[in-house]
Length: 472
Image (cartoon, rainbow, N blue to C red; front, top):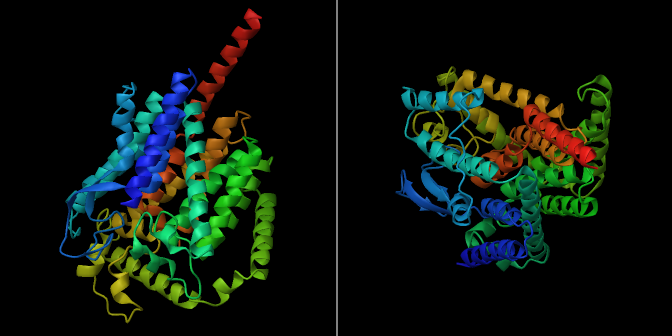
């Protein structure tokens, strides 16, 4: 009940902010974007239909299909569409850019998943499709109805709000050990997740688990770091970056520590370098910077996380999980076993002869490597396209991060940072496929500028400048 009260207060606050500024004749639509960002983080949803409902324990479904779960859910962030329509924003987005190669790739693999004879449960792909439609339609709707500058301001305020909320909760739990604040959003069952790291009590924020909290703060920290580098509200951006790093520290997520160091160094090199990011000089500088930061980390008490605690057992869990993914791929090397079906395949069809550590856990949870998930569910064809997608997008956006147009530079640098973080963290965990984390990544990346969009913006700016000179 607490989470719905908090959500109601937040929704009312954003609408009142919108109404107040609108009444004064000021720009106010950014608060609608902020509400969208906040609803993504809260991750409220209404279950419409679920496969395999015989046994549930909280949000963990024992007979799980894949990383996207078993349930068709109406996500709260999708409510931004009818709300904005009610407030007068009626423009519907195009159903899709049918010239977009990657859209056709997704459609093709949905069809392949449905027709794949190896797929143990073909209907599982519709859970993914239902979620993806809500997310992409919401983003396309916002892009069609609001200026990019309005969207950017909304992203900034929305992530500011969530950062402050997460920081407050982290101060109370685990720092002050007031457990009530850790149960506000997910209930008392989440306290167990905060104690999984041997010898440490981890921050879980509004997500109920240190893993997704750490990844969320990493993505948001990347956004504020891009703002800081581009001198947008520099002091505030630095403070919010620091707040997210502060939260990450108390999640005790080793994977996020490493990823955070790597990504922030990469972003600095990409931003300040006058040559190619992947030149020999930059590779040496990046490697040196990363090594220095890791050495500093080694000198802190946090080094015990890597050299002691449950480090060995966690490595064993991941290696065992990857082995299961490899075994699935060996069964279906070309097209995999189908989108959102690898967990069900592991539990019911995969022949496992090895004596693996905590086998029951491994076969009822997604593989702890998102790239291995893609390989096992879409095969070598899908995995090859997966790598090609990241390569093309990262290299493409790296060319347009220093145009001296502030908002595009911030959004494009954020795009690069989030994708690099997605790749690196995904090697050791599947948290990037959590619904709220995936949606946050899309919200940060969807509104970046392609080279064509940026050229159109520059042309408009030049035209306005020419008119001002002519009228002056």
